[in-house]
Image (cartoon, rainbow, N blue to C red; front, side, top):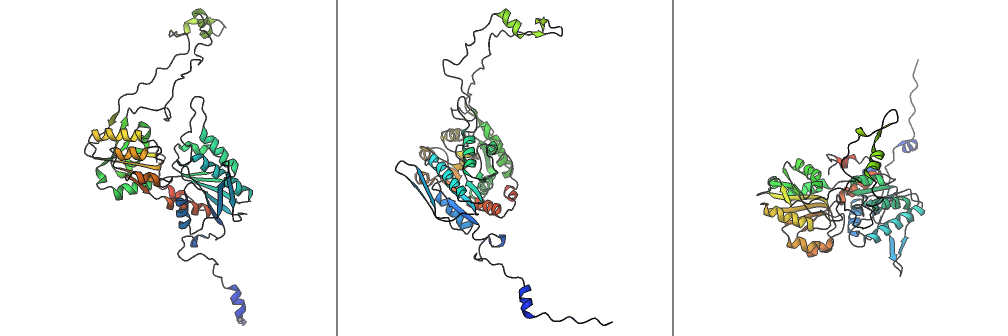
Length: 416
């Protein structure tokens, strides 16, 4: 039996079966060309808090910032107008905290998020390198947990995802009703130590207080160097582990009035199985009311560890009020450290911090550009900046392409 020969396929049919070239208007050098990102899918908005960082991120993503107009009325109310359609788009809002009118930055973020929500945006992701009010994450006396209030406001305004960096307390992520990616800047700071500090092998990582021991230990283990701890620093009212006793006269310590001893014995005695009171099972400590806790005595400041003849590197998550760092640097200098560095992710450097740093024993302060500090660098030549825009842009790219962000957390510990 003869097998019939196959007929040749016409050329016009072959043309329809040939796979077409993917249509894209991205340039050949774009890092997003092989990731399947459409040119019109991602929209990036930026507030007035840190325009330089927003521009760096947009350039790394090969995108242009969406044109918006943010202004104020005569009574200082925030006004916003978006000059582009956001319907069914993924919107990324770049806004950070800082020292220049942080409350206005928060209000701008909330207004932009709500405007995107009412414009039918598909997803609204807040890129907040430094989350404001992150230091107020604990209950103190008659105050409140402000960071939880801020988290609820952001979610209510329409944010569906948060990208931030080095939260002051990692438990703040639980305040949000949306996913939170807490990126780490430690790889950039460690790279700066290795490349920019000569003879870093002769250095010692210093924790300026016992609360920073875990972070200092994490840095020391990666650099294969020693660790030292400064103990005895006087706590202020706004420190995390400071609990002040009530200063009010009417604090309830005399209400209700103490009862007679025999009545107290009846109230605090145990009851036997038969229902009869058995006072022999109760131990009296000679206290007629609630025992008062003894006040903490602040020991004199001291250094635990050897820093003599070494480079001292203090690490923390933020530098705001630098007086504690200046006092620690003076102690390290007295103990023989010949060079002192201070490293942190967020360089708030508020009040007269530049002047204090310039006049102190600190040789260099290294911070990232999560918050703007150009003015502070003008007044203090010791302040150096490490760019972390590549980390934020890579997180945006991976999130938009539905890729895993675990690559950005390689070898990152919980203590970082």
